[in-house]
Length: 441
Image (tube, helix red, strand yellow):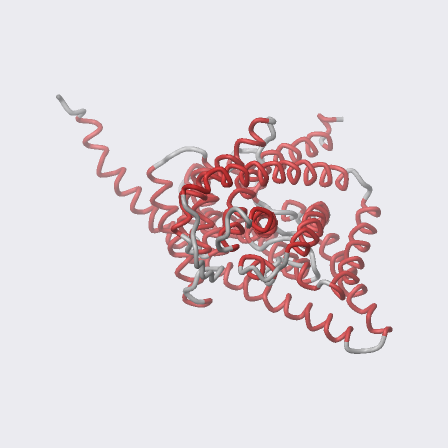
């Protein structure tokens, strides 16, 4: 077979470009990792401060019990006001905005996004908004990649690659999950395989993860000690769990989209009053159930370790479902990955308690399976979901059950023709912009 002389002469140049892109990916990963470390540490301090305020209020007389409501309400109003006026694209998860940029629909005002997302996310989630750090970290990773790409990338195509790589590095840093970051780029952002993107993504995600582990430690996010694993005889229960969390995920998608659409249709003054009411409500609820607020970083490990009993799982699930939907609809910075994982752990553990007489093994297993299934039904990225949960829990022996639950839960919203949440949110945002533009009037 004759070789193509032109293709052979171009090969060294292609390899050189790939190597240069990999070096740029390393730089993006380093920047994204540093931002993620700063954000995680700041958010941790903010949540500790929230708990201190609640404990202080409870330890004094009744007058002091209004302090959390006043502080949280004021803080959330400020966050929503600044976000809507200064950088509305920094509101919510930010992942739909990144997808819009890669699709050619949005621009990225990187410095504004970085400032508003970082400060607004810390204050908002620190004040009790039931959102997660991963969405902001993904968008901030994309923003630092855009800043770097504007100076280092020769064309728009490469800038887009670097932005997607930065977003994946942000996810890897948020959860100490480099492989999940790579697959997030390929499955959610690009939806196709490209060797140059893959190599750059791998380098960036590994670099971001190394940065985080050097500062924050080497352990996985959830430290589980699973004592007993299910056998193949539990296969029918895996199918049932997949159906269960699949329908719950479908409900979450519907609720989030309707709530977000309704709030965005309100006047600005009504949005501010709603933000104030939510903050006051969180201040009151925090006096009774402080662990139900914020990112859920304390509640999720307790659920996975079986420390939350049967009826509490139901209470926390409905509270967190409502809190997450309402918090996201305000337009404040914050993601839904962590809320999804907590809801999945709650649903999976509840299912485990229900079927315990027929499947008496470790409750942690059901929580882990529930997380993957719920994530898959909402985000519709099953490979990313499985890998993410494996990296976060180190429960690699659950690979087959995870795959079964994930594909079943994935099929439920697909059957009902429900769009993946980030795709639906992007369409909602583009429709809203079209209606506001002169052409849409």
